[in-house]
Image (cartoon, rainbow, N blue to C red; front, side):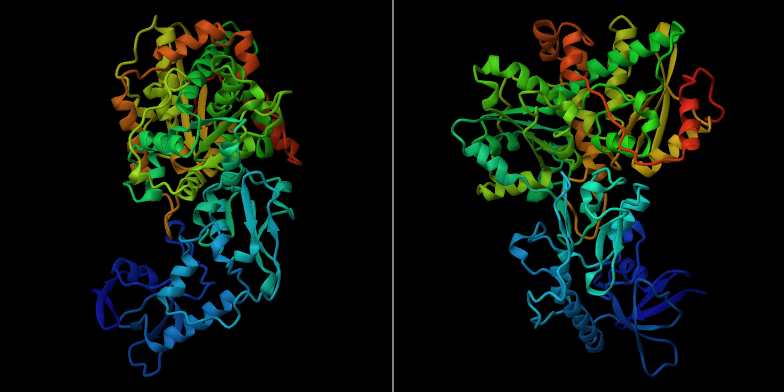
Amino acid sequence: MENFAWFNGQKVAFTDGQTILQVAKQADIFIPTLCAFMPLNHTPGTCRMCLVEVFDEGDEVGRVVTACTTPIKQGQRIFTRNERVRKMQQLQMQLLFADHDQDCKSCSRHGNCELQDVALFIGMPNTPNHSNYIAKRPYDDSSMGIIRDVNKCIRCGRCVEVCRQVQGIGALTIDNFGTMAGVAMTGAKRWADSTKCVQCGQCTLVCPTGALSEKDETDRVLNMIDDPETVTIVQMAPAVRVTLGEEFGLPPGENVEELIVYGLKHIGIDYVMDTNFAADVVIMEEGTELLQRLKARKANKDVALPMFTSCCPGWINYVEKHAPMIMEYLSTTRSPQAVFGALAKALLPQRLNIAREKLRVISIMPCTAKKGEAQRPTLAREEGLDVDAVLTVRELAKLLRRCGMHLKNCKPMKHDQNLFTEYSGAGAIFGTTGGVMEAAVRTVYALTHNGETLNPIVFEPARGLDGVKEAEVDLGELGTVRIAIVHGLARTQALLDKMSAGEVVYDFVEVMACPGGCIAGGGTPRKKNNYQLNTLERQKGIYRIDDKASVRESHKNPEIAALYRESLGEPGSHLAHELLHCEYRSKKSEKSVSDIRKLWQVLSSRYTEPTKKR
């Protein structure tokens, strides 16, 4: 027997166990929501915006319920926008606005606010409490990458859910009571004091208001551009070129690299270069480091294997705070952003005939954690920071708009030539999960097979969006190397648990903190009431760049060869280590000693035994 109900007089079929909101969405019947977030199956019913009036069979008087928490029943009559529902929604919205900071003009979500949208949908009248807060709640800018403005929090809990469900961290919570309630840090008053948060920024992607946002550095960058004594250099991360277009209405995944170059040059940036170049350098250093560790193991020397990638700052933060026992197993190679900064400050002053203190390196990154990475003490030198400012993709869009630029009106323009700009397809795919591993496999395979190119060049086991991927690679005399790729920190912890139990064994592991990798980083464009919506299209865009590249292996990039020939010597040389490698420091406050020892002992066994379960 088919189940059905009526929505505003329209007959709609449904299956047992569904809520009213789920059925309405399937039938394209609009019900406004704020706290309900279907991508995470988060339906707490706290905002009360999804109110509907329901008449069960035989009822003459309806009852108002929340659509997101109420199971639908056979034969019900449901009204989503009648006068009773609208008046109750409007009253609830007035209560939300009563203690909400309505300084919209300065809000990070200005023009892209879900709270404003819902207020419009329900026919919100003028609120009598405009800017009259019942309580003044915290404004926390102590973190290097993210701002928490509780005055804009509507207590929807989305940020809490994504932090717990997707990342498995639980750094965020809703604390306090009544009008003082709002988003807070678990176990800490300030964001900077959190022993849990890794600054991945996934919370900023799901927040419907401006309660959580990246720390805006556009004014700092404008000051650098306008300073006649300063020479500005921009590096652009791999994912930026396939994500920025969405901010200007272009298709997801479209490569807008040359439009970005034009826009940046037009607003006064002196030199536009590319983080992809630095990604190729990372492969040279990280690949060499892996080979050195594998050779040491073959010679029966003590060595830290498996080796974990180190280019994701969210992952590094996770290791330092949650898993310091594996710190020894991290690659010491810096991230592409940090490699670029080091090379730029060390080599470009002579090439450009400019004093180092006048150079300003500005990074465009898809990541909020990159802001903190740029300020790491282990990446700084006596002369100062290697990277002076970090803008997210969203901030770059804001910067261009502030200068009157629209990406659709930009003209294609090439990077500045012969200045850390040429890159291989391998450097480009760093922007997606599996890209670092695939790039490394291409070069490491060639180095162990007398320069022979991996065939096929596309390493399919590393591709796609599966949560955990694994494969084996033949490295000639070094034998078969077992690799794994994981993205999203909840999955990563689950994989570490399996490794500690001896269920899986690997030699080289790529970890990206954000689901999907950098293409879905915490600083990428947001889509209202959606999460990870365009990740697949962005990934396809990254792969298209690789497909079209004339050089697809890092070691074959002519500019990389020239860098080592003219400046660094060989990969892994003393100078390369001084410039391009670093150390990590535990930030763990407390942890069960037995848990740490258990994982430490398994990892330090160097994984010479075969897997127990594959």
